Length: 371
Image (cartoon, rainbow, N blue to C red):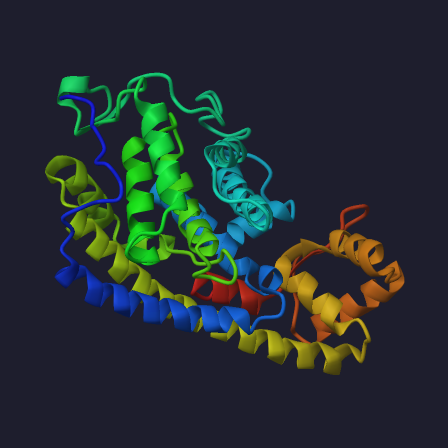
């Protein structure tokens, strides 16, 4: 099998009679979602659970096995070794890449150097760290059954000698304006996956780029639109349509699949954002009733951004950020436990602080009863 040669961008001969109705539906759903997003005063805090969920599901597509609550427990020190710890580290890296990307995109557009930096963060200190993190591949590789030869492969990646030219063409396409920004997002993601520029981690980087590109195109007020839930649930169709591009040149089928994914996931994301907003408002009142404290909003933001935590970590955070005394925080946490807002996962013992959980938010992020 010969290495794949990517089609020049922008694409020609697309079936707009098929695609434009889907473009309209996807745009309408995304607009409704972004309307909710714009109504959130602190989206990075309130939607932190959705960011964690995206990291979990995008990593799951690649075979990593961990849940949202396990990631949060590991961060609170409850999981410290073993295979599960390694899986969670990969997920934590994915989330860190998302956070750092948000900051970068406030001032700069997506560039190849930025993509390499995302990859370096993603692959830091995890399996695959030996596969040149942050560097585009210099070798020919292919995809197929374990141990298969290049002739037996299901897909042979573009020639590494030509890869820099293909990547530069992809970067130029990012800066252009195609017929529609959602259609262009579908092409940006698929072309990146087909170029397969890294030795490992291409799928995750490609999925991170989806909300980042939508934000760059001003289609989103925040780079926070996560598609991995749909792609993970429809994994076979996802890979089938990507493969059909390289095998048959079927861009129409891929773009149609992607636009439907945007429309459906935008609806689910809207429901979750509305549920999180409602929970935030409810808990603001509940914490105020339980504590009668002037620090209600500080406490609320802290448990939303990190719903499983060590009491000592939250105490240090509030002391440093808002000069709230340790004894005050200890009393507030006790009152929130008594009111049923927080639950103790591990009691404090000696020098070991207690580990606490905000169960309703974790359950909402997981979509099931965990606690």
